[in-house]
Length: 249
Image (cartoon, rainbow, N blue to C red; front, top):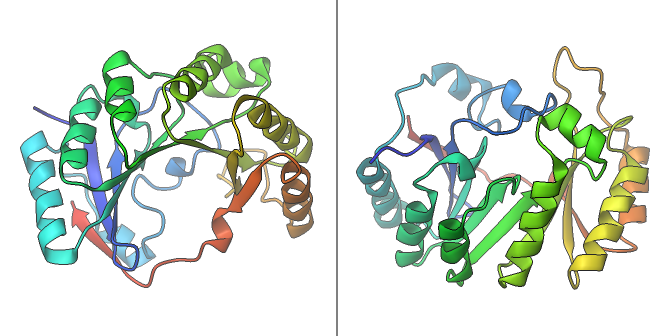
């Protein structure tokens, strides 16, 4: 059984593995994966050494995970990269990781949440789903992702109704998804979930696109406005682990 997993890194200080899936059902022009197909926290020297070696089979993947548990004390896995939910084996992956008593964090755009995946998430005590909200403007959403917003909002509601633990994420993009837009996202989240958490990522500019990195003043304004409705977390303030080990390829 072949997965869509093509890259795994291990963060020693966090005891956490970042599992990256290949392929996405969105086509966001600001996506950081357009800069590199690998974990962008790796050094330039590490990135230069990496070469695609194929998608992992389920047995190969679980072998890497079991080895990381034994060798490094793995405690948590983050499922991300491009879009994990397009992998038909994702429900099995979550079940196997849950059986190993690992904490699981699924990063997703929530466009495709099938019943099998929903059931696994619902029964997983240590699962968290981080949903990236690109925009609440339906026209912008379909223009920049190629997919309608309605499916995302419907699946968010379905996850919440089934008791799945959900937090949210958005990218601060001056001129596209700025303080006004993110304040509206925060208001919306406060209307559908109690004590919502919103991660705000400042844009890392992609060459050839018209959007720039937000200033510190814009970041501060966005945080202040959003924090009236949600608990705000900024990735840039979390800090970086001291060492990253490439487990695959």
